[in-house]
Structures are given as structure tokens and as C-alpha cells.
Image (cartoon, rainbow, N blue to C red; front, top):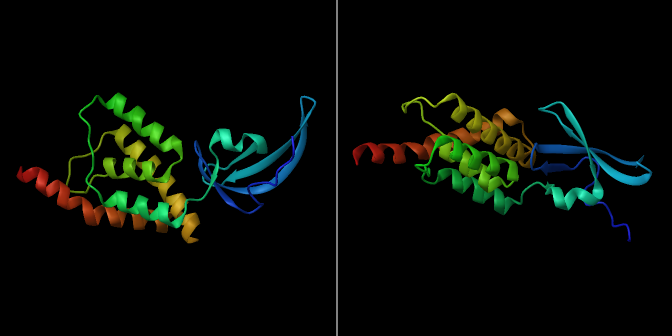
Length: 177
């Protein structure tokens, strides 16, 4: 098996589906169980976590570079859309939302953020709805922040501004119907 050049360089931001945006801080070679392994060492600042990922597992795990500008634009457009609220049981919806967040796909994470957003004048969210909304919006904000070279609070404010601007039209029409 020929060794391929590493897909990520030290200093690159990457998206690890289950944890969000991390940074490659080191490439290591280690012997584990008698095998030589090349590992990416990823640092997730928000969780204060370091993760070692074998370079040959990157694809199967779904680790990827930050989204393209086109994909980011699609995610931001998704935020402007009409929230889709299914009439299924909350536990089933919560599982679907978690699966979308853990997929690491920015457009799916934007869908969850949009669907669970509540303007101030709307009824209060349940604790679990708020938790999932915060997880999705934080994950989206971290990728946006890394792409725009800003910090997470600034990126989150931008996301919330888009939601606040576009959400009222959907809630107003729902009350009139």
C-alpha cells in the first residue's frame, strides 16, 4: 500500500462530524499494538479536547476540510427558509436532529438551527429543544467563525441576526391562518 500525502496540514481547521471544528496541531507516528500508525492530532478548543485520528481512517470517519464558500452560502440561505416542523413525537424528531448535527454537514446543521429557532415573542422552548438548538447553532457558528477568521460569538450573532430577520414572516402568517 503506497503512503499518500496527508490530506491535512498542521494548522488546518477540519470538521470532525461528532465534535465539530478542530485544528490539526500535529502529525504523529506511533506504534500501537505492534503497528506503525500515522495520526492527526486534533485540538477542539471549545471542549478542551485533543483527539488522535489515524490518517487511514479519515475518510471512513467523515473528517473533512471546512466547507466551501458555496456550501456556506447554501447553509446561510437554508437559515432564511421556512422552518419545517414535523408532527411526529419529540423523541423521534430529537433523534433526527441529533443525527443531522452529528453528520457534520453544514447545510443539515443549518436546517436544525432554523427549525428549532424561536423568536422572543414566540412560546418558550422546552429544555431539550433549547439544548439541541444551542448544539446546532454553536456547531454552525464554529465553522462559520473558522471560515471567516472571526470568533464564535461574532459568528453566532450573525446567524441569529439572519434568523431574527427572516423568522417573523413565517410566524406571523402562521397566526393569521
